[in-house]
Length: 227
Image (tube, rainbow, N blue to C red):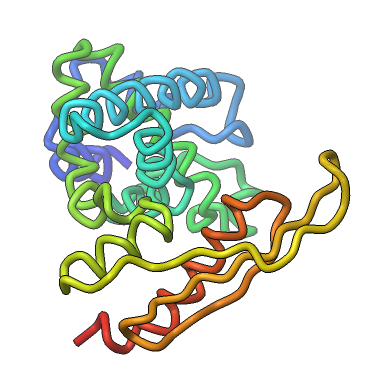
């Protein structure tokens, strides 16, 4: 296992002064009492902080809701698992015999948890500045694959698409409203006259119905948008 840990540190581009922290970060609770769950707790908070900090500076005009959605996208379980797989983390995990036999080295939840624990171990071993550099380096591919545009709402994306082609903006009209104020249902139509397309959607508010109708229009325009 020593060779595997050395290789892991090379892939991580960080060498631990206290190797026991590294070992603990990779220890599943099935292996022993000194496992990685407390480190996982700390790492989750550190990743949220550092990814949030990065997005705050990278997107200075983004609203709080947009930043929250981007952070959620960046630190979701799938992203953490992908990072763990890139580091070949599964083969480095310390597992109890039963867990190992049942495929624990490939278990996605264990890999994602170990990534969080590993980040906490880096923080405790090297401090925040070092940890920040490691997180930014690890998450760089994630940041490259995402962007503010990925979480814009359908109405905004449709408007920007039409504006980029110097076309008239979509027209939204209320077709029906049913129910009372506490249980209302709105049916809205979105029409792009210049392109001869329209869509109808129903939701509990006008705004939600407009968003759904705009999303449907985007789906209709998808073949054109890909050209």
